[in-house]
Length: 377
Image 1: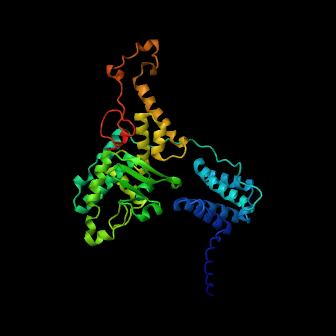
Image 2: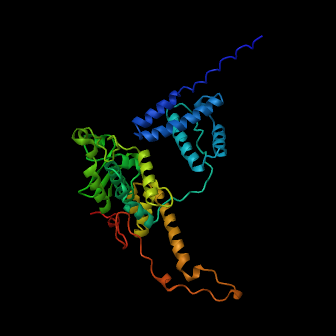
């Protein structure tokens, strides 16, 4: 007798329906708090994780207790989630339950008092001055085989100069318009003022700031603007996106495209490790701080709301100072034991004062001053 046919596989279980209170909270963040689309996406994903956890316990989201939250935090930590990542997730959850309490939906915030596991704070990865200058000065157009390749290399050179010379985030760079229009400010975009030598951007928290632009960045941008519309012809130029940096089809570059192009440029320039946009922002801040020592000015240029966010660069600068001390100060070396003979004589050049590195927007070798450190014309 033939075997009976196997039963058809059961359909995959449908994902849980979105929690209506989460939807109300996200709408509150979008309309009243006016958070950026990226921030809203991150909040939604973190709250969906919590909703799935609650569904696994057969509990409504608003009936979770602090014991449940602690258990979920322990699960995330054991799965390899960093303490910093867990802290960001807890911050989003805490905001949701604070809102729910104000709406009278809960009597107690279960996330209140929950702390993420401690983890060491990594120092921001910054390039050395020589490496940053090599990346900015790299002439990719010289080896380009076609006009299309030259167009891409000129564009990428302008992006690298702006990222390093003005300390922009990748999202801020992507949001720049070539010429400001009626939609620029309304839609939260920025623009470049070549005549004034300034970049106007919309940063985190929908805060606008103006950053000086170096001479090298101004020259690179003028070269790019002269070629920007060329591949699209007269008719195509009229339909060209208002974005300062566009792709082959004339549309605004995404942050992912900027990351990929900068990585490719750093590899072609011969840098030992791939470079991403935020590494150039860290380099901008670190090199300015080394040259000027003005932490408040660096805070303003970066657009940090709190000086605490900027102070991480003092730790980075101290590492540089420690290396100089170890290499040059006679007391930095351990005294040899009697059977090892006298201590080696320090080279004469070690006593020479090390010149301060140049600022990001400057091509000079002398010490930089703000705002001249970024080479404002």
